[in-house]
Image 1 (cartoon, rainbow, N blue to C red):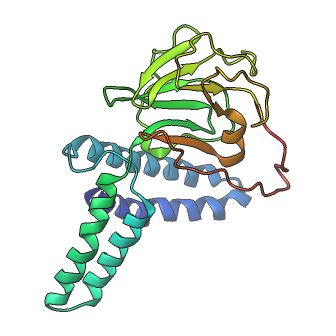
Image 2: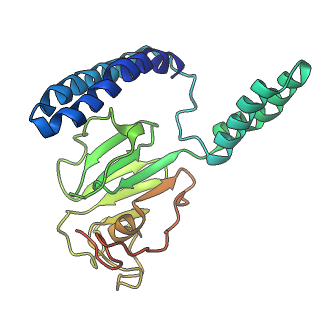
Length: 249
């Protein structure tokens, strides 16, 4: 990450920013495309730098899971105190804060299932590998940390049954009846692709539902390897472009 930023910042400072400013200034005169073209080339260079550094990064340096917010705060405080403090105190502060931050990051449960607002489903299978499944069409974006994953061919047939780290995941057909149970009653979780509310009528023998309506409301639903949701439902805040209660299938 440090090497990628050191390589990308000169491009951003001396090419991207001036090209964006030039496009803004030249647009009223009909020549804004010249600045935008240079700006686009600079973004391609930045993406190439990011891709190259990602491919060259040695494996095993990262716990392979999203950093908890507490760890980010502790690492940031350690960096700040390393700059401010002097002498032995600098190292004591860094060790005292970075140690717990690293332990919390390693001990945090990993993502087991993530249903993003894009409609894509990311599942960590029993072997530990994360697969991307194109499930339904959504209006949002997938997480940046999964941007390099290609769609998997695991769900060629419906219903799709996946053996994940948190148990068996059932994905019915995207147009399946939301109130019907999946025929595989031994599934631990079942994705419900319609806007079924928490009070929807479902048989007691159904697997625990993961609702698309919750994905629309909160932006994403994530289950960790302990089966607990790592993102709680956020209260709806009405906006002019998306009032509360308006959901997209």
